Length: 93
Image 1 (spheres, helix red, strand yellow):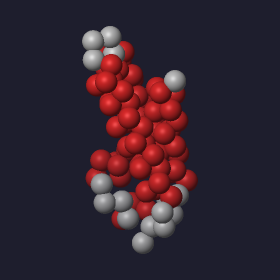
Image 2 (cartoon, rainbow, N blue to C red):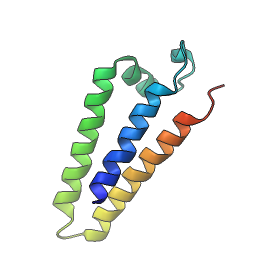
Image 3 (spheres, rainbow, N blue to C red):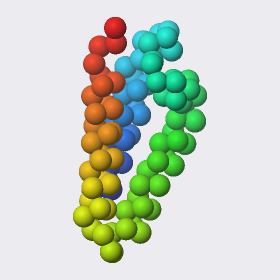
């Protein structure tokens, strides 16, 4: 269940990253990694899929012995997706 929430939050971050960008946005993006990824949509989707696979596999490996750590990893990943989506929806100056 929480992996689904993580996926939704991360995909919301990815989608709002594209929808909220005005024309000529490359000069606005201060994060060089994000600017490179957003300039190539297929690369951004591949990177987000790799991130989700890494987090989900880490949680699956850690959960049997350290369930609190697994929950923390999911919580941090979900929070990062939500914060990213919210920051993408603010007005770009």
